[in-house]
Amino acid sequence: MYMYGDLGYWAIVIISVVLGFITQAYIKSTYNKWSQVPSGMNATGAQIARRMLNENGASDCGIGRIPGKLTDNYDPRDNSLHLSDDNYRGGSVASVAVACHEAGHAIQTAEGYFPGKLRTALVPMVNFSQSIWMFVFLAGILMGVIGLVQVAILLFAFTVIFQLVTLPVEIDASRRAVRYLQASGSEIDQRGAKQVLTAAALTYVASALVSVLNLLYLLGRTNRR
Image (cartoon, rainbow, N blue to C red; front, top):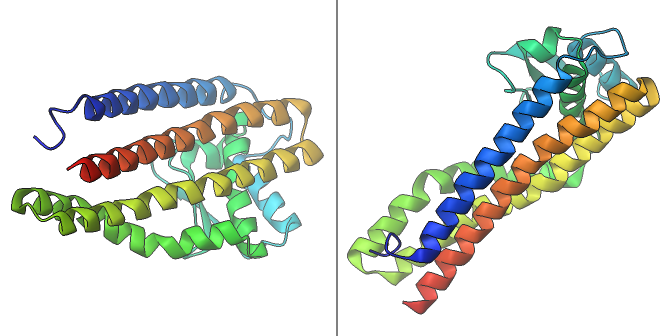
């Protein structure tokens, strides 16, 4: 009754579903398009990422494989790129773009990029808050204790802050990738990387937007009650 009968709540649900569908469809179609176009660098994503790392002060970063599609990530805990098989072995424009984006994160770490350090520092708190905030929220509703509801909203706010901090980190990594390909690759690599990485960035923007809307809804609803 706290949310499910509220039109504002359902508006956010619809926005979340629509944005999620659009952004996921866009990233998949853009990635699939450029995965069919060979890179002008005549090398695999892993090989190009290694060059980028070596040339930008992050030669100690490792590169390994991870199962799945578009599961690529950089993990600062082991200072390694984890590239999906397609992007590790593939030599397409999309593979090179994604691999260089992840290399951009490793270079951020090597340079002590502050937003990246802040995001890493927030991870333990965010993992804790994500696992507990809903239980605290429901307990506050069922027991009629507004203090618990407020604590739950504060915990959820850490997730929103994390997503907002993530945006400049992801955008900067993409800029580093495009800049490297502009200097070392061909025009087709640069153009394809811009499209692929812009599509990927939109998923982060959509996620952050939905989280902010949810936080504002919870704050407004709690204040009214």
